[in-house]
Length: 90
Image 1 (cartoon, rainbow, N blue to C red):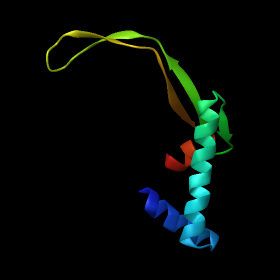
Image 2 (image 1 turned 120 degrees about the horizontal axis):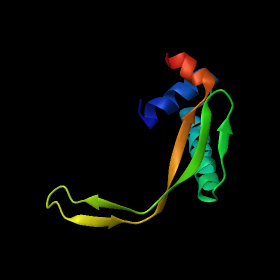
Image 3 (image 1 turned 60 degrees about the vertical axis):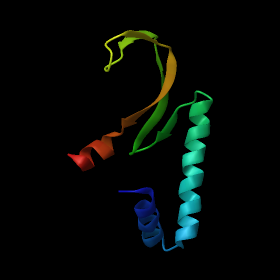
Image 4 (image 1 turned 135 degrees about the vertical axis):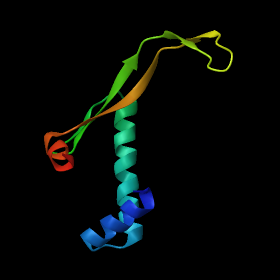
């Protein structure tokens, strides 16, 4: 499902315009993103939680040449599915 298809689904289920549904989805995504930038955790009961994970620096390999490269430490987003989402997908 693409973002456009999700907006159409939200608009149909909520009985609102596609523009309003798009604005609401964009606001939700921006809210989650800004919280993660601050290192906060976002929990959506029944759906799951978003958090930030720290990766340690490591040595990798260039697949083309086989040379070793240093991969620096970084922060990456992580999603953990909630119990209800896991049960729905089962």
